[in-house]
Length: 151
Length: 358
Image (cartoon, rainbow over all chains, first blue to last red; front, side, top):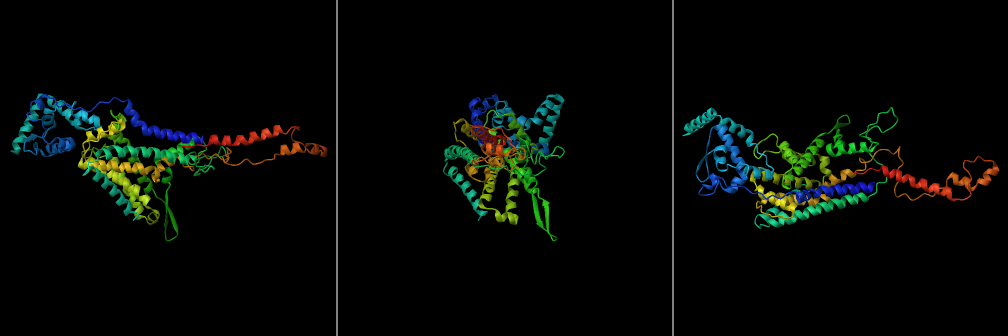
């Protein structure tokens, strides 16, 4: 009994230690491939995002977070990139115009790395809200007033 | 030196990793070779320790009896603090492993003007619990890097861990927990004079090492950033035996190298209490000494001369004297000898089947 207990302990420990290897041996291996082939990106002369690829890879979430705070709390909607180009601080109207395939771009990487951003907690409903024409008009008025107020 | 030594050692280890991957770019060494070796050393070392412990003698039933033992039917037994059955032992062990029940009873003794005051000291229990649970959840969370597709329970665990959605990347509660836990455990050793007196280098080193690992991880996640897709490519490659060390950030290798040091150090250090707790004889045995006969397994066979044998040998004389006779007279010596052997063998077997091990 004593011996079987020790052996069972060692076997369970080995099984736990080898579990990740075993799980990977049987799971399908799909390499991470991001799709940049959207009409908007294809039409660009130079294939680059608003900042360098390294910066976007590592820090896009913080950029978007600061954008949200700037837009929602301060009404500041203009982002000036490092190279001086100005962009609207908007996930829908800046990022997603080029990356119009979030399932093949955002979600691919996020699900590969197990990241669960809560962008769509708000943005989904906002998109729905804007589908109503009068709401869209309201939003455009708001944008115009904010832009006008800044300049 | 007992405190400063470990700090210098961990800084030196971090420095080695930085030197190896910053200026020297030895990515394959620090990202592939050392992790494989460290993992193998951990698994083999852990097994060796368990087997060694398994070979050691457990001659006595020595469960701590912290409550009423099983007695007469109208006396209420404390089944968890003085278990008499396997189920009770499992319950006691589960509470011990998951909630540190015996540490919860930790008491502190203070000198007062009138004499000595004994009070409950729950801080150690609380912070030990915070530290260990944070550690467990952090280790489980890291499996997102070793599995693809990621199982739903890991995603759920991460969601729970970052449920307050503070900051971006979302702050994990366990990151705060592990830092708070280690800090308390460290400060406790430094500040309390009696604990400080008995604390050695080997008590401080694991704390500093774990703190270094947590710190490198936190810096990597919240501040300096790494290319996560390259990290996952490497970690997945490791478990698929096709490793490609394409990560270039030294902070990542510092984190990994300190973890490797922990893995190598783990089986040969006090950290082995992770495995050893299941083998604690004072916890994993049922207190059934009054119900079951336990015989020391290496007792030599005692030469017995039973009354039955005595009577048998002197049967004729006893009968002649008219003494009362308890047994039927047997001419040959064999039957009583067999019965004796059977009785002697039966007891240890019965005792062994009741022995419980984790």
